[in-house]
Amino acid sequence: MLVAAMQSLAGCQSEPFRSIGTEVKSIFGSTRGAPALATGIRQYEEGNYSAAAESFNRALFEGLSSDERVQAHKYLAFINCVSNRPSACLVEFRRALAINPNLDLSAAEAGHPIWGPVFRALKSSR
Image 1 (cartoon, rainbow, N blue to C red):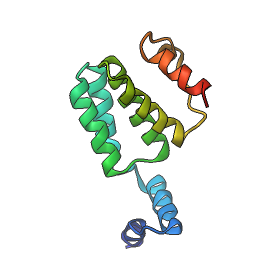
Image 2 (cartoon, helix red, strand yellow; image 1 turned 120 degrees about the vertical axis):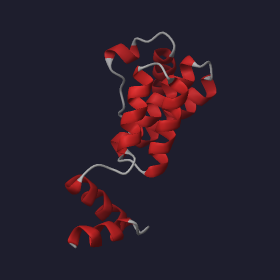
Image 3 (tube, one colour; image 1 turned 180 degrees about the horizontal axis):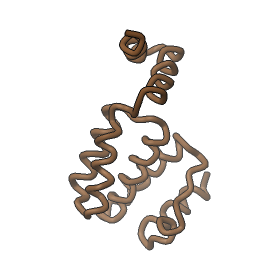
Image 4 (cartoon, rainbow, N blue to C red; image 1 turned 30 degrees about the horizontal axis):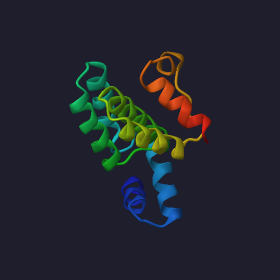
């Protein structure tokens, strides 16, 4: 009963109720979009970028924590970079950095010849 009440409050749009919703999610389970995010990561790792992009966008639409949103935007940036869409790549990296200005790529990600330089240039321009 308490969980149901807290979940109904989580749908409210005022800041205090949104933060309660975040607390409920962290206590009682993952975010609504977490399964789509996990699917997107698996699809990305399998090289199915089109399906992965759809899954990441669905995850963002369904709702993710801040850290999860950063991860989704980062993967969308990677997909756009390797798909020769540099402006969309920049947009996604900007979105990730807007959520977490301290975002850094792993050593392997930062060393990627396509998106590594894009990310470094964007981060150094901030």
